[in-house]
Length: 139
Image (cartoon, rainbow, N blue to C red):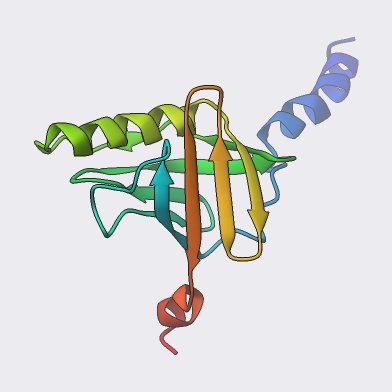
């Protein structure tokens, strides 16, 4: 009986550990923030970067990052770690907005080189940074 239980539950346990999210179209891409809740970013270097398994975000003066995956049109990010440098109030407000957006499992739409992330409380509009894959490969 014990073996039968193990045989029945082992596949379910392994399925819970599998990587179900399709990352292929986003892995190794970078995106520049154009609008955060309708406003231009405080930093001209505000970017969102997708590696194969990690997401990285630079909005103001801090960095936010952690694991990510996609499930249908939803971005699942986290748990996320963040540096805690002192920022101007406006930059800090945008960092908090993006942090809240990412942990809210936002809807993502990508059309050409444009991406929109939207939750019930926040929206971000981004443009793809071209040439990221080639520069990472050294070519």
